[in-house]
Image 1 (tube, rainbow over the protein chains, first blue to last red):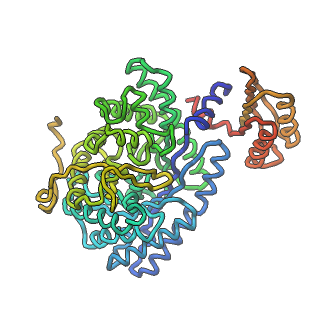
Image 2 (cartoon, rainbow over the protein chains, first blue to last red; image 1 turned 30 degrees about the vertical axis):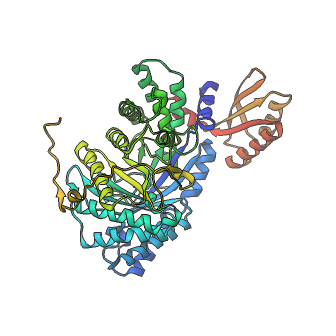
Image 3 (cartoon, rainbow over the protein chains, first blue to last red; image 1 turned 180 degrees about the vertical axis):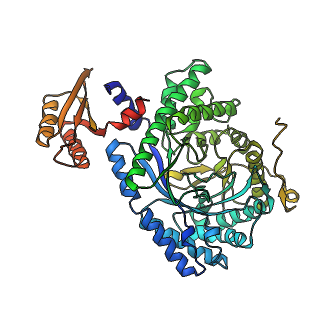
Length: 454
Length: 90
């Protein structure tokens, strides 16, 4: 029988250590909405989303009350829109019309983000893909809740350097058209390598072509809980440290599994996966960087950071895998800068640079995330940063991503405020040397060899 | 049978259990188990209850128990038992 100690432990995690379920995301296939008539397509998409996801928010609230566990976000991911719109959209403006429809549908069902304004161009771009990608800046300007992503490489296909080059321009243009709001459009745009089909987290979520008609994916969280658990084992050896992280990750993930199964039952939509994640928020005590400090670093970014993050990431997966029947998505610790007060402190202290963050992305989920850079950073430099990050993903058979924000009108030493879960960020310096001749070569980087691993 | 867990945490005073129990009885909620401790003046109680025949839906009971807690100056939380079973039992 349940005892008081266990009940108190769980409730302390929720009330004091920021334990929450970060997101319930419904993945919705839009393939059955395809039509060559743009107006018809728009109405099909609107109807499908507002029908499948109509009870998402109310069911989420019911589950919150039932278990007294906060479910921070209720979201939707959809089939990449470059495919869904390719028969109907002749110009970037046509795709922007679809973005508006998605925004309206998201507002109607009251979700805070909808992901899948996306294209998958890992090997090559069709003409439609390119038209779509060119629509992204305007689409992010005229919508509030739509998130966009472009997958430009994979371990199997190599890296599409034409797309990498183009995305440098697109990110800069997005920053320009949303400059009045701190270039916030770029916070909703991510460039990926090896993008998973079932990621519930924004801005990279989309409903992959390998997925069923509709599916429930859940992202868990709880860096504060891990931090508190590690406070109890200060000075202990790595065995004790790792066991503590593993056991805590198990408990956190079990809550995600419970919420996912309950949501699946109530919405009558199959359960897809749990994303085993440590997702920080700007709230004090909800930071992945603070865990790294608790492991023994003065600031995130100090020597030893990559090793500490590697063990943290691995133990989270080891503990989480047994707690859930299906695991997928990005699974690992997130290291966004603006969304993590500990990371912000490290940057402001001068302890953490983009280069160190790049090294950290080799051993944890995702990549260069929510990093503000000077607004006058060249397009080609942004492409170079993307290429580096994609190469890490391609060679190491993992997902990597770049969500970088060139904040127009701001330079190193300034800050940009995004508000809410997106937080604020100090502008970080970027290496000033040119990579123009490299990124302008055109074509693609071949897929890597899968033997002789060194 | 699906059970729920009611926890009461806060400064000890006269009549906390009485008030909660009266509410439960009035709403046909059966108490299966009670454990309670007081540590340095802090009242800590856990009840396991059967709400299957409750006169009101779970949401309402949860809210009303929360209000009783506010009146008493303690925190009352009502949760389905599965969150604890999932977290602490394999």
